[in-house]
Structures are given as C-alpha cells and as structure tokens.
Image 1 (cartoon, rainbow, N blue to C red):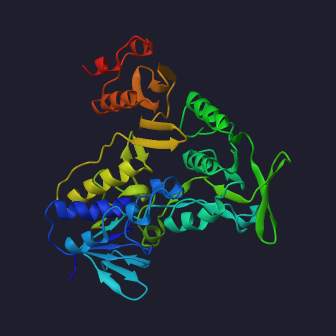
Image 2 (spheres, one colour; image 1 turned 60 degrees about the vertical axis):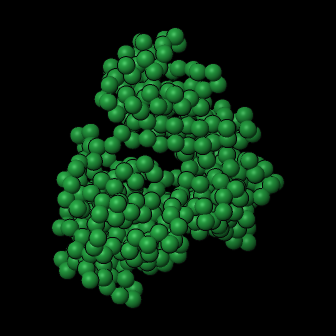
Length: 401
C-alpha cells in the first residue's frame, strides 16, 4: 500500500511523522533511518552523553514503542540507494517502496580532514552521530592531550567537555578569530576568555598544516607556522554539508541544500524536504538553517503542507550552546550587522545586532531575559531604539510594551 515515506530518521524526520499523525493523517507512514537506533537527540551527544551523565535510552526522542502505537513503520539500519521521482519509488538494498508523497529529512554530514592532512589516522574524530561519540568516548580520558580543529560551536563545545574530563586541550582555528562566521567579535572575545579561564589553549589565525602519525595513530598536529602540538586525540569541528546525495542523483534542484519553495516542495512533484538538508526562500535569497528548532518547526510545517495546509515557512531562527558554566542563547541572524549594543546584567551579558536602526539578532550569555525579550521583538518584527537599549537603566521588558 502506498503512502507517505520519509527518508532520514533524525530530529526533522521524527517531528514530521509525529506531526502527520497529530494532524489526523490516517494513511500509511514509513520513516527510514540509516542508523540502527530510533531517532535521537544530537545536542546531548557531545555533552551529557559523552560525559556519561545521560544513558542511551534518554537520548531517544520518543520510546521505540511510540512508532508502532502510532502506526508508523520505522525502518532502522536501512540505507536508501536511490529515489525515483518519476516512478515514485524509493529503492533500498533489499526492496523498493512506492510512495504517494516523499519527504527528505536527510540532515547533514560532517566535513572531515582529507587523508593528505592525516584525516585518516586513528584517533581523529568527528562529533555528529551516536557512533561517532561512542568511538570517541574511550579517548576522552583524564591526562590525555586533545587538539580541537575548528573554533566554531561544535569545536568549542567539544573543547569544554574534554577539559571537564581532565584533558589538556588546544583549540586551533584557521580564521583570525573563533566564531568568526557566526558571531560578532565581542561574542568571540567573551567565549575565548571563558575557555582560557578554564585552561583551554585557544590559537587563532593558526591553520593546520597536517596531522602527524605514529604507528597509524595520530600523535601531533603541525601548524602552518611550524609549531607542533602533541595529541592523543584530535576532534574536527570544521562544519557540515547538507546531505543531498539522493536528491542530486535523482535530478532535484540543489542550492545550498535541497532547494524548496516556501512551503517545502522540492523541484520534483510530491517530494518535500525539511531540516538541515533543505534550503528555502528567505531574506531575498535562500537560507539553510542547522538547528534543532529549525528541524522541528520546518518539518512540522512541511507535514501540514503535505496534508494541504498551504503555509509558508518564515522562522525566527534561534540556537543555543552550552560551554562550561555559560549558556549562550541566540535569536535571529546577525549577518550584515553594522552596529552592536553590549548590555551587562550581573554575571550575564547580551550583544544586540543592528543594521542601521533595524534589529537583527541577540547573543545572550547567561542572560535568559535578554534572549526572551530579543526573540519576542524579532517575532513581532519590532526594532528597539539602539540608544535606549544601550542605556543600562533601561528595563528590557519595557521594550515589549
């Protein structure tokens, strides 16, 4: 019997099939995942799970029984070889599944260091999947030496966890500063100071020349300036790429991910996409967001549209990052800002991004009130007066009135 098939059993895929049932869809639904476990949360993998503070079962987004109870066929450990939009077929290794509608929630894949730089040595890890973290865990041992390649959020979160476990940690970032692609210099400064206060060595403008190995295992990182840093384990956090292989091979339009319209339709009839793999029209161009919030919200919007809702997806992006005792909460996108307002609130602080007089985003560090107010202002399409915001006497909640 044909029905809805969803490829990719991560946060977006799990949200999409659950929303289909919540909206009353009674037809067949199949969720296909390449990993051998039910859909799980990724953010705790590199933090609570790696630290041994969260058991495997608590990672699962829902109990495995949920899928059977909801009449959702969950195929785990199943890799899709190809999709055929003309025939409306999904081809697995051992069978083909017909579909009426198909959703791609294939997520993203971590970038790896090339073999020419030593990326194929034992002891070199990425942090994306459960298998990645299970492979890394034995190496995160007190007294070991860790080199983190990449000063973005993933690399810095890994650095914080490794330092908490008692490792000697060095972060190397090729760009002039950490978080350069995603945050203002003031946010970089605050995060850098936090890491250094906990004993992390942070090296910026420090491109990796190559990893050195001994007996097939990594033993050091050699920088472009000639410095050699001894290492027992290397974690690479140099970004991810949208997983578009199936879509590209099937002839779907690709533009920084699987290209969709505002409602989540791809260029192929009855094929939709959501989550890390999908780009959608926004801000006069195309946008692809890598966050839990986007995966859930976009997937739920696509589920409704598969059932005929006709709703455009127009999110206010938000993100978070936990590092040591700092919770960094971000609302909006600061890209293109030309002005930054810094506010302090006790031990917390917030950085407010503006383009002219237009409010774009806020970074709130241990300042949940600033995050909440900033997010609500963005959702309402309102821009506070930067001068009033800069006044430390201003009551942030008053900006909502």
